[in-house]
Amino acid sequence: MAKLAMMVDMKASSKSKRTAVATLTVTATEAKTRFGPLLETAIRGGAVVITKHDTPKAVLLSMAEFEALGGSGTPDLRALSEEFDDLLARLQAPARRKALKSAFHATSKELGRLAVAHQRRRG
Image 1 (cartoon, rainbow, N blue to C red):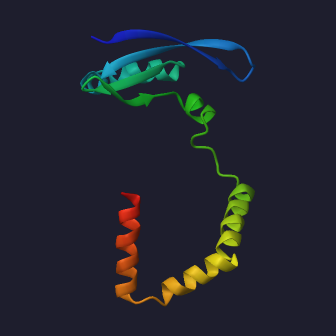
Image 2: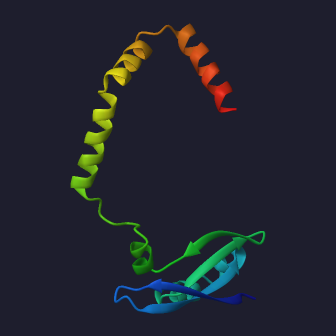
């Protein structure tokens, strides 16, 4: 049987008022067998935490809640273009350009040695 864990999550809604969100916690097996009612709970604004071996693994949310968290929004083409331009500018810096040029002209033996050294530094 699912345990209803009432979490008071003080979060600002679109009208800047505070609301309490009920969170239902269920096992993965129970989520499979009771998906319809759990989906309705999420659609009505609740959240359903799905656990596996007593560890939270996923959350079922309404689409409105998901979008409020920043998911599924249409990417802003201007922001993506600016991000690309910034990355390109960093790659065009003289030091990076020199490093890329030497990487493309390196022998396989040199690349292997550098890869091993890099891996050792990372631990």
